[in-house]
Image (cartoon, rainbow, N blue to C red; front, side, top):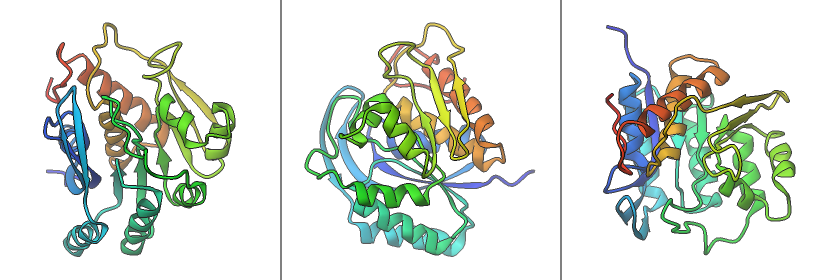
Amino acid sequence: MKKRPNVLTIAGFDPSSGAGLTADIKTFEALKCYGLAVCSANTIQNDTDFDQCIWIDKEVMKSQISILFKKMKIDFVKIGIVQNWEVLNEIIDFLLQKNNQIKIILDPVLRSSSSFDFHSSIKNDNRSFEEVLKKIYLITPNYEEIERLYKDKNIEETINHISGYTNLFLKGGHRKEMIGKDELYTMEGRYFTLNPKANNITEKHGSGCVLSSAITAYVALGFPLLKACFRGKKYTEKVLNSNRTLLGYHRF
């Protein structure tokens, strides 16, 4: 039996399991990776309501990372919510100390699907954010998130700026037009459009987490970035079409 690659998620715990690290683990397992998890926050939420976010101390997160790397080979990491860019930068540096070739996919979750604002009390720290961008393999914002990353830039300017540092996968679920059209911008200056294939898509809580996790899984399985994005999108569409509720299934 072929050994599965280890993939680490650093993300929040969602009791409904629609989003966050449990959704990531479901995705990794379904796509034949072995999922590992470090909790960045405990949340009090379900699929429609978000009441509170309790951040996990960064030293606890580092200890969890350390004990995993002590035993296991980890070359791929997906990161979701983290308290702020400064803490994220420190966690990424810690990961790179453990494996300087590690590929990090960042899903910059700034607001929950139920409109809880994770970074409302955090000042816009472009310097720390740009340090993060230099160290990661891919960032996967949606349209609402990319609008908030640089308040002094429009979307086109922000895309050009970010793709000068790292690969950018712009999720299209929050577009005002052509909903579901995703776009990949590479550091080499290449551009690809990924149009939706499935019909009658049903909205799901945590769909952005699933998409970024699926892309990470396919990268871990050895697919080039573009193919990993196409396959990740296809997997996510299956989850979106798995039932009519806000909580998707990962076994079809």
